[in-house]
Image (cartoon, rainbow, N blue to C red):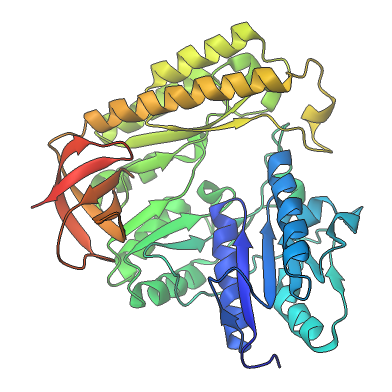
Length: 430
């Protein structure tokens, strides 16, 4: 057992799935008697790692080295995707006391507790062995909206992506466990839940699909006011899911649908399972059926073979698709992927310039989308107070600021959107 005043901090890198898993680790450590802290110093640091890009891996290494330099007596643990993909050479984690890969996460907290007691180093990095979905229930989140990981792993093997190697094959939370987790979170006043996973849209069970699970959650979770999807692939947005969005306004009017490139030649090289026209046709159908819906996307630029001409084609097509906003990433070579050995890699300076172009386009698209919402009415879930104004997100994931002398945190408020500000929209209570 740790000393009564042993403190810990978790540094989460990467995606919402990691954020969910970090909450699991925190609750487990608290049950062991440790105290979570926001202070810079802590007795135990956990780095929940990401490996989706070289930048993410580099940030992980930098965090670990800085922690060891600044807090030489603290216990440092690293867990997750970067550990898994680096399992053949774990020397990059020599500064760590506990090293745990993607398929041994249940060992993390027990190993930390052992290391606190005997000051020995522990490592658990297994190769994938057809793992079942690791269901770890969470009682509550520190933030207002709560994540629910209902899927893990990936079977798609895009040519640039290391995630199938880092997280293994697809697996799913059972509907029974999902209902139990949702009820527990809503009982702690998390009135908005975000369903997340590596391929959330592929959830299935006994012939049922994601839309069926969402209906179950909405119909059987008392007090649930909004259900949001973190991300979903174009070919996973089923007609039934679109019907559900039309029928039930508790389903968030925002879909984050990764495109990755606006050029068919690059999409093919990436091994993405659609053409740009197929993608565009699908989101146009979604907009026709669910007017006002926000559709955002991920874009990778600087992929091997992306000539200036193909990049300009991509920019034109992305603009033409009228996406709400973009998450833009420069292509990053990942060891062991098909893209690693492709010819005609793009130089770093060109990638930076293209990221800048697409980021500016994203700002332009988002500003245009916000203008379409002026003078409309919206329900906003208030998350926190920022510089004297209450801040939250609307159903269509617009950042909204409102003034009020009341304590609005954790509440849904109805507002009229009256202006576009620098960081989002300004609303007034109605």
